[in-house]
Image 1 (cartoon, rainbow, N blue to C red):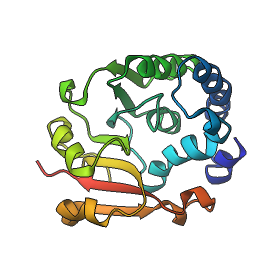
Image 2 (image 1 turned 135 degrees about the vertical axis):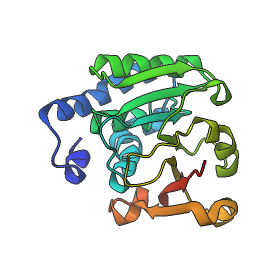
Image 3 (image 1 turned 90 degrees about the vertical axis):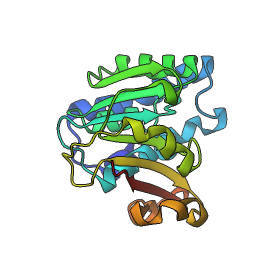
Length: 208
């Protein structure tokens, strides 16, 4: 938990309590439904929570912003972002029902009022959002094809509406088809831990 406070020292007491509760909740749920690699659960705060919050380093979502977390798994990046931005609405979607159950139960256990969940495939979700966030669920161009229908026209944030995803490694070829509408942020510029050396936030604006 200290690693979260290191980079986000301005948290309210409620946010601190919510972040602190995640370890026991994920450890407990992970023993029943595997949403995080068993050997990685001890790195929950660095590899999952802080990684998710990399998005909060590149955009400060305005009050009332609506976001879909596509392929949320057990709730990443959606749940950490929902704690960080209590006035922003998050809709967590995954095609695997038991993972959605974990995300639903954990967000409920820590009292998040700004989270809804849905068990469905991305193609089935028809609602509109300001942004879609995701953690490396599929190649960028495939993801953009699926979520274009979900992006609202009206803008209310500093960055135009679009896709914000967490990815790692060499992205040059993957980004090439949408290069002119893409910004890449290196997380090593924000977080000093070795884990973030190759991790990036990729933002793609979606022009309607």
